[in-house]
Amino acid sequence: MRLQLFILLIALFVASAIAIEPQKAVVVTYKEDTPSSVIDEATAAIEQAGGHVTHVYHLIKGFAAKATDKTLETVKNMGSQYLPNVQEDSIVSIDGDIIENGHTN
Image (cartoon, rainbow, N blue to C red):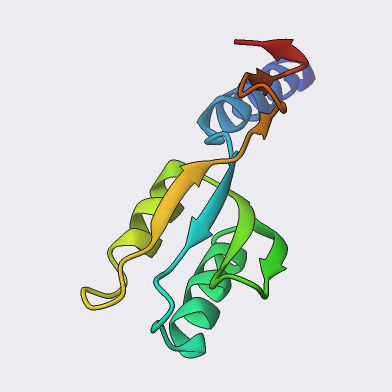
């Protein structure tokens, strides 16, 4: 009986680990006329969905975050008047090469 319970718990753990959607690093920017309330709603939606806002920009309207694709789709569809530009975050070298996971593409 204990063995069956142990196997069931392991199966549930594996199933829940597989079901976790990966998060990706993104930069979300808005046009200059976008109200701060729109950006605040977007960052709150990311945090509520289990994502993390890693930086809020002040020179441009936007922020960097880690979130799932589903959460990012929600943010994109939040308002029709102020649409965000969502791009994957990456490191770009001075010669224009994009560096991902320590490797130049």
